[in-house]
Amino acid sequence: MTDKLDRRKKYTRMVLKDSLMALLKKKQISSITIKELCELADINRSTFYAHYSDQYDLLDSIEEEFTEDMVATLNEYNFSKEEEAYQMTEKLFEYIAEKSDICQTLLSENSDIHFQKKGMMITKQFIFKNLMIENKLDEETFEYFTIFFVSGSIHVIKKWLENGMNKTPKEMAEILNNFINKGLSDLR
Image 1 (tube, rainbow, N blue to C red):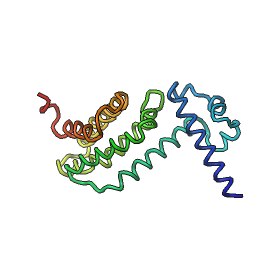
Image 2: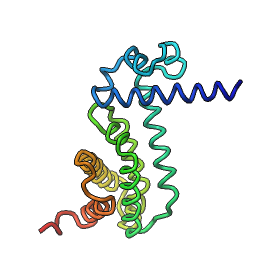
Image 3: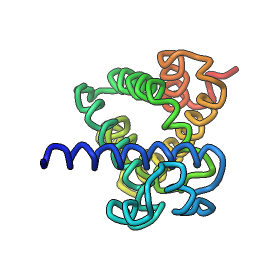
Image 4: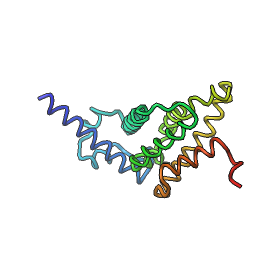
C-alpha cells in the first residue's frame, strides 16, 4: 500500500513540475495561477496544496532538484588547479547541454532570479574556488571578481542556449576560460 502511495506522490509531483515548466515557456511565474497549473496537470487544487504551498514553492522544488543533480554531477570530478578549472567548465557545459530544455526555462525571464543566484554560488564553489588562494586576493576583491565573471558566464550560457548550442561544450569552455584568464587582451 505504501509503495503505491509513494508512486502516486512521485507521479503527481512529476506532472506538476512538467506542467509548470510548460507554462514557464509561455509566461512569467507571477502570471501562472494554481488553477491553470492544476488543469494542465489534470489534478485538483487540494492535491496541489498537499504537495506545494504555491507556484513559487513548486518552482523552488524544481530549481533545488536541478542544482542538487548538477552539484552531484560536478562532485564526480576532482578538479582543483587552473588547468583543471577548464575541464570543470567543460563538464558544466556538457551538463547544461544535456539538460538544455530545463536550464533554458529556468534561466528565462519567465522564471525568477533565485535560480541564477544558486547558479552563481555553484559556479563560484566549483570553478573559482582556488583563484582567491592562488592570486592572493582578499575576500572583498574576490567577491567582486566572482560576481563579475559568474554573472557574465550565466549570460554567456543563456545566449549559447538561445543560439541552439551552436558551439560544443569544449569550445564554450575554451571561450569562457580564455576570457576569465586573459580578459580582452587576446581578442586583437
